[in-house]
Length: 185
Image (cartoon, rainbow, N blue to C red):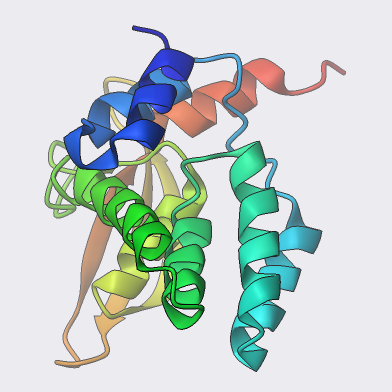
């Protein structure tokens, strides 16, 4: 099934969605643009969230989701806004989406090494996971393993325990897209 077919099914019944499959199909589709988020709309979303302007949150989230319906942050913001506006059905729809997308990433590995790295389709997914896990990033390195797989490795400190460590993200999909779409010199 194509990404669009999966997306249509997911929108109509998010609780029955295989979010891993949806993310991977998106990463192989013509719609995949992991580095092209509309930063103006993202700033509008953040500003509206900060001020509690729920109608503006919904509008900004909708614009971001039109570009990429798998935008975790837009779904999370839309869920909050619809909840505040009293539309529980829409709040739940977006909650199922952002939770499903996050679970898809977290179930792709444990992030402790190259072979168990979290698989991401978008660099923003890394920062969502880092935030959910309560980590503060200290350093970041881009590393290629002996099999030519690419990883972002972050040194972190856990905000709750104070412990330090490393977390691994497999970035093959966004890096491959970037390499194949880079302008030739």
